[in-house]
Length: 437
Image (cartoon, rainbow, N blue to C red; front, side, top):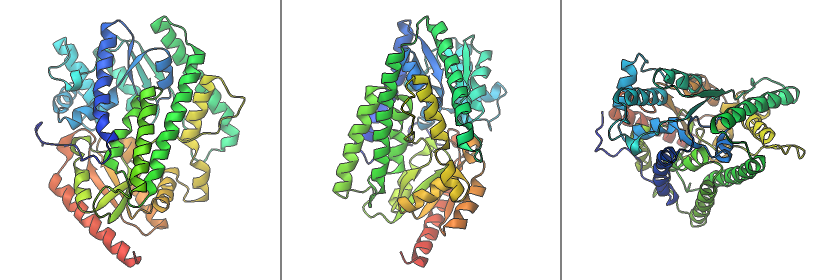
């Protein structure tokens, strides 16, 4: 296991990527300042469709999953994981959640924020906003915190239709249901904050978010260039404004600057490595935050990740012109984001996630796929063996499985991982030779 002194992060290519760390620090500083001033602070889950609502209600968010990743990058998650384990939570549960639970259990025991917690620790929340989106720990985590704090909780249901659903038949029902769920959250926030929602302001914030996502999508389109101007290690930093600052001028301005930087790099053929030999996709699983420097090893061998399936921008969604109420706009966005690949996948391999990978393999001229089998994340790991088989049914390209975790560094073996990477890139070489590349 690495020490706090060892570098764990990857080398950045973009100047914009170097500006993300101050944004993360400011997130936690703003929450502590809001708490001091008596303004509402909320524990939140990413991609729960309520970002703009919190901004409109002047609720300061604390993105608790991010804090797990932050502790991992600082190699300071062990004490929180150990505390969660002592409290009876299995090490095989989501390590974002067990890091957060361990943090709050220690805070309750010590009656203060644990000493030297990364970025000053998480401020004490006034409310807990859970979510059903993506996985069950995001729904149960905050319920478990009832053991350590008497804080109001609201869990919002973010519905995702089954893949074989006829979207035209179910769209209205799903959107109506999602609107009712968001209405419930707004009512909860109005009661908790003693403040009424400003619907006009919410619409303006949603407009800002749409522009932010449009700019963010442009950034990723520019990565199709050869050589690729931006690697995965930059993506897994620069997603922060789009996921944790959505609905703010800071996020919009960040991606405008990033797009311009990428345009410059593309026009001047500035790549990530001196000689781009292999173009890879990060095709499944969240990254190993404790050892992001593994991307440096890929880069040293001439490999660049040109696209990732995790932490990506919302897709552009067609919303009927008559839909102008902000809650309906949010509901349409959620429905569209989670289903936009359904119809295309039916014409292809039948699996939306795999179809996205197949499409990107072609669009980004990629030579192989790497998936991260995350020990504590079932949502992003289950099905990867099937996904590999399905990918290789349609394209003759190698797929590699990395085995580790998002937070728990005890699962990581540098020697084993480097051997895997060496073997995988040798295989990529042989495939390229066989295909005449």
